[in-house]
Length: 203
Image (cartoon, rainbow, N blue to C red):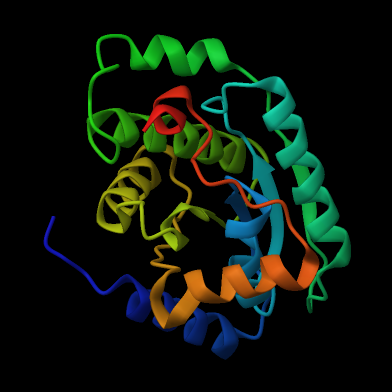
């Protein structure tokens, strides 16, 4: 797929939404509260957002639970135009390890990560279809360590498969990542220094 300016594409979608004068529903996969902070503050101006917290890659249950609590707290405390809802997916670390079999030695940011993106985005697409959301997306592109091109390729492929529009994004643009750090400081969010899986922790 040829490189696209995903931020400009998102601008066009938002402009169309404003022109129609409606507030569509958006199911947003979130990896953690810090990454979701900027995405929520930005998109809750235009969408009714439900956060889907589905992250089987997080290896320790204590770490997983801590991130869930911080996500819920942020949703409760962050002032937004349209209220944000929260859904917790199943915690299925066995699915992540099954998916990672044979890819243990792959470097961070490689094929194992891409398959992890797909697993989490697929769960989001399936939930969005089942519950009638207008769009689905993920917060993952806010991180400079995540491949926005690959995330959007996967999202658009899932759009074709599930029939739910994927909201393209590159949330790190327009200082999104830096703003997420500022929100983390402002709200005292627990900010981990690895994605959550055993492989990223090792590196």
